[in-house]
Every structure is written in C-alpha cells, then in structure tokens.
Image (cartoon, rainbow, N blue to C red; front, side, top):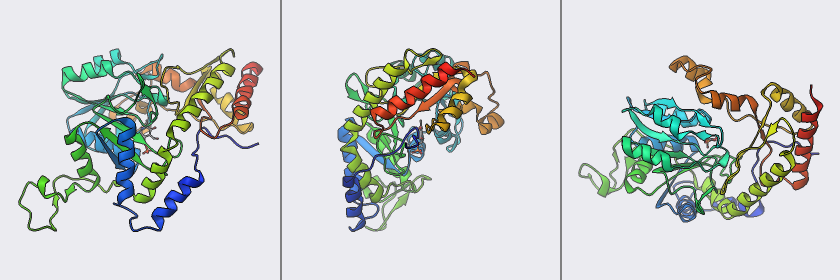
Length: 378
Ligand SMILES: Cc1ncc(COP(=O)(O)O)c(C=O)c1O
C-alpha cells in the first residue's frame, strides 16, 4: 500500500523526452522553449501576454512590481493563502493588509474587503483558494473606484473556469505556479498573464535585472548595437529552457489532469458527504481542485491527522492564516482573533490526497479511513 501525500506530480515518457531533447540542444536558457511555453500559455488562457518566471513567488513579486507597488502602498489580500502572496508586496517596500474570507467560498470576502480599502490601496489580490475560481466582478468594481490594480493569485487555479473561460483573462494580472503539487509542473516555475502591453513590458524588464536590450525601449541613445540599459532594479528571475520544455509538454495534458481532479473531488463528495462531523469543500462550476480541503471538528483535527498518517495517508494543512505567521505578528502587530472565519477554517482543515495519479480505490481507501476515524470518537 503506497503512502499517499496530499499532492504529487505526474511525469510521463513524453515529458522526459522533451527535457532530454533540450539537454542535447543548443539552448539551456533564454532559448526557444521559453517562448514556446509562453505561447502555449497565451493560447490556453486567451491572455495577450504570458511572461514566465523562475517560480510562482518570483512571478508574484514581478506582478506587484508591474502594478507599481512601492513604499507607502498597500496590498489587500486574504489571510487564507501561502506566505508568498503577502511577501511579494513586502519585497517592494509595500505593506500588506487583510480582509477575512467568505466561508462559503473560502476566498476573500468582497464586502469585508470593501471595508479595508484606503487611499493607499494599490493592489487587491484575491486568491482562488484550492482552485475555487473566486468571483472577480465585485473586486473589479472596488478597484475601479479606488484606481487599484487586481492581481489574481491563481497559483491554485490553473485549469479553473469562469463561465466556460479559463482563469487568466479577467484580472489585470494573474499569477500561476508550477510547483510539483500544482496542476502542471516545471519543477520550479511560474507565469504571469496579462492583456496589458505595459504590464508585460514591466514584467519582462523585472525578470532580467531591470535591463532591456531593445533599442526602441531605451531612454538614452544607445552607444551601439551591443548596448543594454538598466532602467529599474530587477532580478534574475528567468525560467530556463530545461524547465520550460517540461512545462510545454505538461500543458498538453492539462485538460486531462484537471478532468481527473474533478472526478476525484466528485467521488470524495459522494463518499464523505453523509459522515457526521465532517464538511466537504465548497463546490462550484469550473473548480480546478488544486486541493480538497475537508473540514473536521476543530478539537479532533490533530487526532484525524495522526490516525490518517498511521494508515499511510499524509494529509496537510492549508494554511496557517498569513497574519498569524510569527513574522507578520511580530513586525505588523496582527494577532489571533483578527480574522475569525479564516482562523476557524484553519483549525478544522485537512487537505486530502488530490493528484492526477490517485486511483478511485485510493480515494475509497482515504474516505474509508475518514469514516472510521469520524465514527470512532477519541
Ligand atoms: C497561493 C499561492 N501563492 C503563491 C505560491 C508560490 O508559488 P511557488 O511555490 O511556485 O513559489 C504558492 C505555491 O505554493 C501558492 O499556493
């Protein structure tokens, strides 16, 4: 019986062949696989520009830079997210503020977000938590009033749909991650998509040290055809061709990866919905199911985790609300009780195994263990 983690990659012989071909070729980085991967991403999402990054965190950092975040600016987001959603703003000297989640979606609550808008709000950054495609319409209204930019942290949401359209077109900028537990992987990797030429230009500048080689973009007359111009303090955040070749190959399987995740979620829903003391996650059209976040009684969460691990089911908890991380409490004064819905969810949550290679029998095995623990008491 294999140990089931909450997520894992799926790599086949085509993926391996694609990477080997790049290793045997001329370009390990800054070559044609990067542009081909970006093009495939533009085609899939329907966004005008896709700009790849070394990882999702770098991609978020780039998106905040593109949006113009600087000292004095605030980024408003959900506490129910990974640290990178806030950290990307801090790297630029901005500050992070939060509004609580809507327990019906587990995503940023637009009404609570409205109360937190200030004249300094530069970015509103909703997260499509677990792959639930957060409704961006109310945030767009808020952003329009305030003159803020919408950055969707879509790191859980590749393959998610809104009205039959893939996530990635609605926000000003949408950020994805290709960590191995995500829908497709490049080992490490990330992408920002946008319809704005100006945001795309700033993203490309930021990921290559803030240096442009394009004479048409230079502010000063070039010395010659060799000239480059550093216009901003950027980083080396490039994705290599080795990584991009894996991403390009994985993109061909994205639809089947997502379809299987939805099947697994439907089977969990069916098997778990009648069990007392557990609550299945919110379902909605177009959910991409990066995670399957089950809620159990808060007082029994540790018992569930321990007993599941004894049976070879390695659940995970997503997330300690970001405002409760030591760094955020110590430096910004956030405390327990600030965001009760996110905190209640955290105390009850277990992410069950959810990945393409999980079989129906394994889903039944996990659900059977949950039932047994729920009914055993103590
Ligand atoms: C919501 C969210 N934002 C950002 C990130 C950062 O992505 P990466 O791990 O590729 O840097 C992750 C990945 O774990 C994430 O889940």
